[in-house]
Length: 286
Image (cartoon, rainbow, N blue to C red):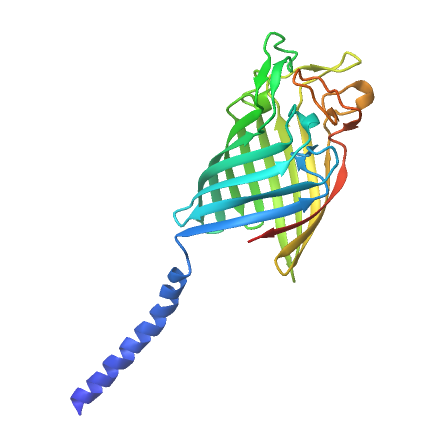
């Protein structure tokens, strides 16, 4: 009788341990070591750091992301662009990135590198920087950056630093960008987002038509709303900047719909690339 009682107690204890342990093992089992996702989106306009990249025309964007359970990640992202946005003879942007993410409580941290590449684009003897008139841009347009980021709940802060000439503009390595963003879940598939950023352009001088100069630095901002419909995310946002882009004065951020390899805008139309605009989008991650 005593032996049977002991066996029953042992069985009950074992069952309790198993029941307590099962959720833990189940959670571990649902955390894959390797994760691969893709993304696709259609946008009414492509704005990079507030500046128009498609001359107000729609952009089809997409890419993929690989992540490891250790926090290491790699990815690629692509979009059509207008040559007039600084990519002579080019119409495609390809981004390649990788880094390491980790968390500590409600805090998240991210460190990585990003390379922007524009296949088919080509500068040839383009004098893009008045501060260094003897330096010219030649070859395919590109830009390499390293970055560090931190997040807390729905807030995030990211600092990016160019380790190459900033989008091939001579002697502008060291240009940096600070990005403060918020993404808040309202529930029922609704979300709101906001962003403010500042570009600290290094060692650029551009002379406007009236003789005034611009160093290329500016602040940009965004306010938007999203709605998730069975995995498809609809978005609407207003994006603006204080970048100098008045075409009547030939300012730095006045773009045409085409750019020559010598760095001279040669399109039939021009527009202020930093002027505020609404952007509509539909996207999906799969």
